[in-house]
Each structure stands twice: as C-alpha cells, then as structure tokens.
Length: 192
Image 1 (spheres, rainbow, N blue to C red):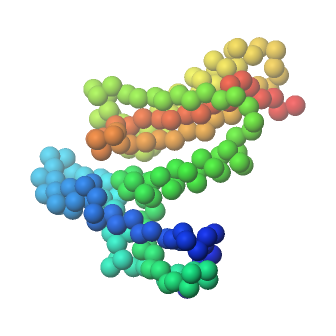
Image 2: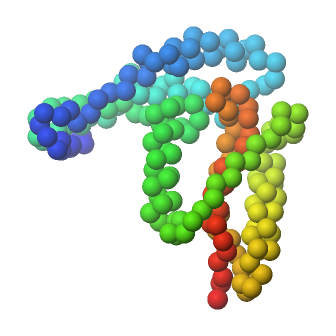
C-alpha cells in the first residue's frame, strides 16, 4: 500500500486516466488485430508489443496498486502503466518529461544548444529498417556535425563536442518514419 499526502483536502490526489474512453484506444482496440493480420509486410515484434501493451495500460483489470491518502483518508486503486515510449500518450509523455528533467538538471551544462532533426526521404526509408543501421547513420550525422564545429574553432586544442541524440521510428500518423533528434552544445569543449 502506497501512502499519499494531498496538499489541500479539497483537491483530489489521484484522477484515473480512463484510457479506454479515448478515441485512440477505441480505434486501436477495434482495428489492430485486422491490421496486423492483413499487413502486407511482417509487423516487427517491437511494434506488436507496443500496441499490445498500450491496450493493457491504465486498465484496472490488468493490475493495480492500492494507495491511501492520509489527509482525506481515502483509498485509491492506481492501474499499472505500460511505461512505453511509442504508442501510449500518457506513458510517452511521462517518460519524455522525466528524460528532459534529467538532461536539464544532470547532463547538459548551462551552455547554448542547438537542436537538429534529421529526417529521410520516403524512397530510402526501407533501407533504414533495423536499429543497427539507424545507429550507424546517426554516427555519420553526429560525426559531420562534430567536424563542422571543430573547423569553426581552430584555436581550441583537443576540441570535443557535447551532443545527445534520440532515434524515433514513427511519424505523427504512426507510419514508419525513422528520424533523429539531436541536441548539440553550440560550441566546443576542451579536455585541457
């Protein structure tokens, strides 16, 4: 049992999400199996797993934790989440916020940064089907950014860059759309 403390007795500590009442959930539940069976190409396991986990996320029947609020003396059931970073809007947002907070507080120094988004034309996306190929392409992209930044700082000995990258597989319509998000410090660092 988890004990919660609400800041004000008039406020509710926990409001269930009710994912089964959303349009996205209804569409996926209704059409996923048909889409999976009729797909012209085999659906990768990670995509199938993301969809199946989403259909179980936030549903009390699939598991829950009990919580108690000491202020209002109420008990709550909190449904387990899928903790996915693909289909589920709730878990994806939570993971994104936690990752961003960690990067800002613990990783990225207080320096100006630039964001790059690297997308690929439709005609070559079928060549980028595996994570290994995407990682190799990402290394090439980051290496080109590194070379350009170091060229712009010729007087800095042992110049190095600071960069963080994320590989994404889907577009906004859940189509296969591999692309990179890269955050790069706007300048170079020296090891001396």
